[in-house]
Image 1: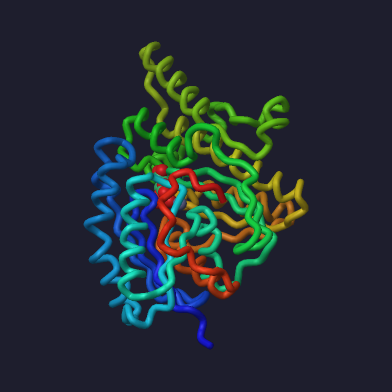
Image 2: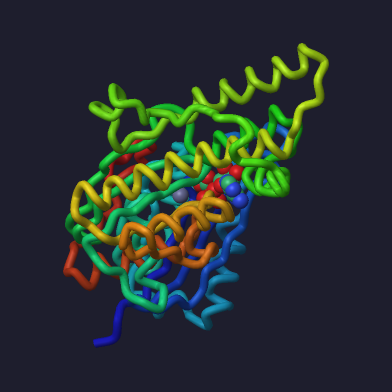
Amino acid sequence: RDAPLVLGIETSCDETGIGIVRGDRLLSNTIASSMEQHARYGGVVPEVAARAHLEALGPSIRAALAESGVALADLDAVAVTSGPGLAGALMVGVGAAKALALSLGKPLYAVNHLVGHVGADVLTEQPLETPTIALLVSGGHTSLLLVRDLVDDVELLGETIDDAAGEAFDKVARLLGLPYPGGPEIDRAAIGGDPTAIRFPRGLTLPKDLERHRYDFSFSGLKTAVARWVEQREDAGEPVPVADVAASFREAVVDVLVTKALAACRDLGVPRLLLGGGVIANRRLREVAVERAAATGVDLRIPPLSLCTDNGAMIAALGAQLIMAGRQPSGLAFGADSTLPV
Ligand code: KG4
Ligand code: ZN
């Protein structure tokens, strides 16, 4: 029997993602983002995101079908992100997925967004190897996972206790007067800057913090430290060395992310690390991860960026894995769950 043909719907944040896969083969991956509508607010506005999903879903599903040459009637199943994420945004995707599955008479699979990020890796050339540590960093999440088995055994090791890493990039960009989204702006501003110019704090890395928060992250103290540093400069009437601030801030974020992920690899005896989430676009993060993983004998996997940022293909891929593992569909009685655990 052929591998299952699955359409995946992702609407947990500001990307309307529709993906179609056959088993571990990617057929289409269309993404419509409402990013531009959020730019003037400096962050994702939930109401705006939900409305944008509602408008984008129909055309996006059509585009994904056209791109893959798949007819709706040929689908074996529909998969949808049921959480975690923005409640209103999730609800739009879940509603659409239920309507589609019901009208087609096809099974529906509710999947976890974070596990979906890991699932994206099955679509790459080398199949996902487990166990692996997964570091997922975006504007909405910063999570460290131990994946023993994609379908059966994913454990949350730690997560941010305040801001997500991408959120920290966005907030620091804003206080440096740079536009949203801040990640690429900080990357650009950091060119030529000295990453050792200012020693910004590394959140939750002191011995007393490591006891309780070994694999957790905190970026709000860092953001405040940058704000205070910039303010002092301005109060003293001195120019702000934007390139040095951007490079030093980025170094602090990258250092903590990579250090904690590799610590998990070492502590748990898992010599594999998978990266996911939009912040993976950060050049310095990839550079440091590659260097330090090689130095510690960890096999590093970085899927292409189109599979790292939020997308529907990863949701479809996880749905297909659930089907191939013999899982029962979710039915129609589940709801969106903004705090769904892994
Ligand atoms: O995964 P994503 O597209 O959407 C969600 O947040 O779910 O990630 C977007 C986040 C934003 O916070 C953005 O500033 C950040 O990823 N980002 C970056 C870079 N490109 C995007 N952060 C750091 N460096 C980058 N080059
Ligand atoms: Zn995500």
